[in-house]
Length: 264
Ligand code: 0O2
Image 1: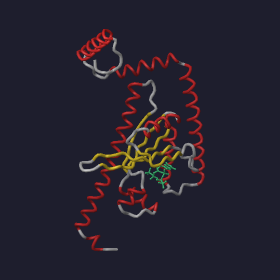
Image 2 (image 1 turned 60 degrees about the horizontal axis):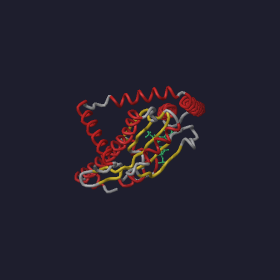
Image 3 (image 1 turned 180 degrees about the vertical axis):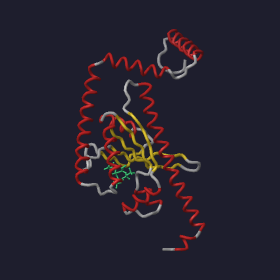
Image 4 (image 1 turned 45 degrees about the vertical axis):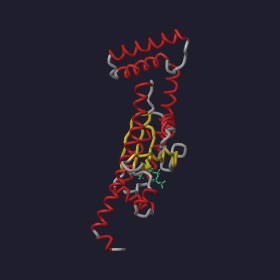
C-alpha cells in the first residue's frame, strides 16, 4: 500500500470531497424519486376514489453500510466500483394495501420517460427461501447539477403493509442475532411469511368483492375525494373570470360553428 497516499493531506482532502459529492448525488436522486412518487400519491388522493400508495419513505445508506455491503460483495473500495455495483445506496420504500397495487405503482413509475429501469427483482412471484416478499426496481433518474446531468441509481422497494411488517421484524431479528438466527426462529418467521401472504390474498379478494358490489359506496367515496380537491384554494373572482371567458368562447364557437381547441 502506498503510505504516502494515505497520509498526504491534499490527497485525503480530495478523496473526502469526492465522497461527499458521491453521497450528495444519491441524496438528490432520492429527492427526485420521492417527488415522483409523492406526486402520484397526491394525484390519487385528490382525483381518484382509491389510493394504491399507502405510505412512502426513503433512506440514504450510511457510509458504514456501504462499506459493509461492498466488502460482503467483494466490490473494490473505489467510488467508481461502488457506484457500478451497489444499487441500494439511495432507497425508496413504497407501501401499498394490496398486491395488485404494487404492480400498478410499478407501471406508473417505469412508464415515466426519464426513468430508466436497470433491473427488476420480483420477490413476490419468487419469494426468498426465508419468506421475504417485495418488488424491487433498480432505476436511474437524472439529477440536474450546476455543470452536468448525473444519472443516479435508486432502489425502489414496493410491498404490501403485511410484507413490510414481516420484513421489518425479520430485519431486526437478523441484526439482533448478527445473522446467526436460530433454526426454530427461522422456521417461525417462514410460517409468519406464509400467514402474511394468505392475509394479503384474503384482503385483496374482500376488497375486489366490495368494490364491485357497492357502487353507491364508491360514488360516496368519489364525492369525498372530489371534496378534497375542492379544498384547493381557487379564488371566487378567478372562477367568475374563468366561467365568463369559457362561456364567451363557447358562444363564439356556436356563432362560427367552429369546433376543437384551436385559437378562436
Ligand atoms: P439494508 O440494511 O436494508 O440496507 P445483489 O445486488 O442482488 O447482489 P442485494 O443488494 O442484497 O444483492 O439485493 P437484494 O436481495 O435485492 O436486497 C436489497 C435490499 O432488499 C436489502 O438491503 C434489504 O433492504 C432488502 N432485503 C432483501 N432481502 C431481504 C430479506 O431477506 N429480509 C429483509 N428484511 N430485507 C431484505 P441490505 O443492504 O441487505 O439491507
